[in-house]
Length: 154
Image 1 (cartoon, rainbow, N blue to C red):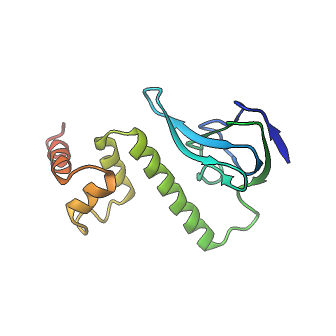
Image 2 (image 1 turned 90 degrees about the horizontal axis):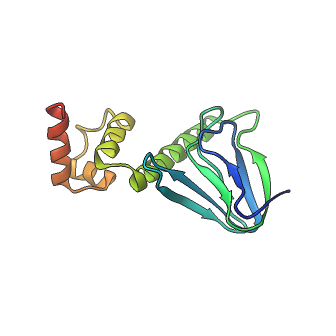
C-alpha cells in the first residue's frame, strides 16, 4: 500500500515501465496535455477502481496520473513474467482505444484521419467513408474535404 498526497503526480507522460494503480481510498485521475498546453482528462479512478496507462513494457506512456485527494493505492507491475498471446491482443486493443480517446479529445480532424490511416491501413477501401467519418468524429462531407486536401498535398 502506498500513500499519495492530494496534487501529487504519480506518473508523468513519457515515463516507461509504468505501474497499475488500484485505488483503496481517495481519487486519482489520468490525463494528457496537448501540444497547445490544454489538459484533457482521460478517466477518474475512485475507490475500488484501477487506473494505468495502456502502453506496454518500455514504451513511453501517454498519460499523466495524479491524486485529486489524499489516496491509498496498491501499486503493481503491469506485466508478469509470462504474457499469454490473448493478453497481448487485449493490451494492444486497450492501447489503441486509449490513443483514440485521447485523439478525439485533443487532436484536429486531420490528425485523427492520419492516425486512422496509420492504425488501419488495410481497411480504408473495405468500409464506407461514412463509417470512417463516424469513427474519427467528423461528418462525411468534412472527411471528403480532408481526403481531397491529402490527395492534392495540402
